[in-house]
Image (cartoon, rainbow, N blue to C red; front, side, top):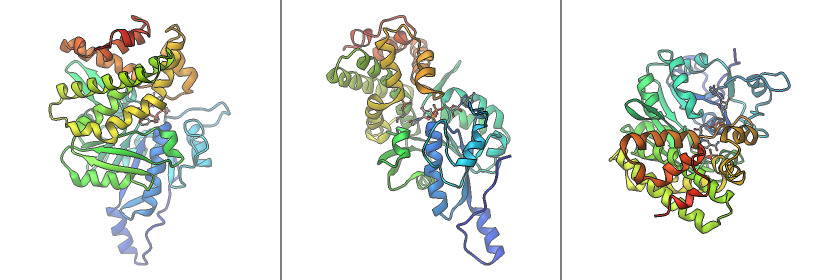
Length: 369
Ligand SMILES: NC(=O)c1ccc[n+]([C@@H]2O[C@H](COP(=O)([O-])OP(=O)(O)OC[C@H]3O[C@@H](n4cnc5c(N)ncnc54)[C@H](O)[C@@H]3O)[C@@H](O)[C@H]2O)c1
Ligand SMILES: O=P(O)(O)OC[C@H](O)CO
């Protein structure tokens, strides 16, 4: 079992007061410890040390792996305070405790931060259903969606429905490696009704170099974060074909238009203003310039589509996961089911290129207005 930490922030002599304070303090667990999961834990851990309303300790669930040295990843994290595989060279904070036991990691927390690749979330929810606190609240940092028989299901809804808890989202122009070295970034929390809870999430994440604001549009925020990964794949194709900045800007503009149109068809309540938040146009820009989806799509196009995304992901990302290719497939299923394929040429074409039904150059040919 992972080690535990004593609180250091509570400076009071009366044991009774100590106990009362401890009982009302929130306990945070981060479910996920990839590139962004590790950075999110670092951000949170710097705040829980300074804010009296949170326990110092941040538990971070680690999907256990044995590294080439023969050591377990969770043990190395607890020994070195670094996630040597997914975020090498960055100290997470001494109050981050890596825990490979999922049920143990979530059991005592009343604030659950979900940040795994989206394809693993359904399985994770099944493992922890009925094993979390009754008063638990969740936030999802996951960019992706599932497609069910009934239609598309956003990850925050999956969490809410399966675990029976509220779930906010946090999305934004957030390339994790840049935030890890404390370069200034912004993010958007999306919430449904409970502004007080949204403010608590903002408090937990906000730092001098990570500015978070909240908007009452959970679907809009989450769809921006999810759909931009498909546009990033398109932008990568453009880069791989050396088509230049104007073409890439055109693809980004068309992509943003499809993002907005699709979001509003699915959820008419989505607000126009959400697309101007960090989760909207800013995330689209950063992801099309510097993200992993863009990078692998560039390599795909340079190889004329002859090497699969699975192969490129394994070789170029070393265990990190792409979300754009599977999201393009999920999106395509929704579009064909709804009869919307012709209304979303960029989204449809990205999927057809990814599965080899069209060449990379089709991204411009088939998407031009
Ligand atoms: N990395 C970024 O810059 C960034 C920024 C913002 C949002 N996000 C989003 O955050 C989410 C998580 O991405 P990340 O970058 O933290 O992860 P990652 O791609 O860096 O790492 C993959 C993670 O998946 C885990 N994993 C592998 N197999 C698993 C399994 N069977 N079950 C459960 N976990 C398994 C690995 O242990 C690792 O922690 C994604 O939705 C991503 O789009 C990422
Ligand atoms: O590296 P990507 O393409 O998964 O994108 C990372 C983040 O989502 C950017 O905000």
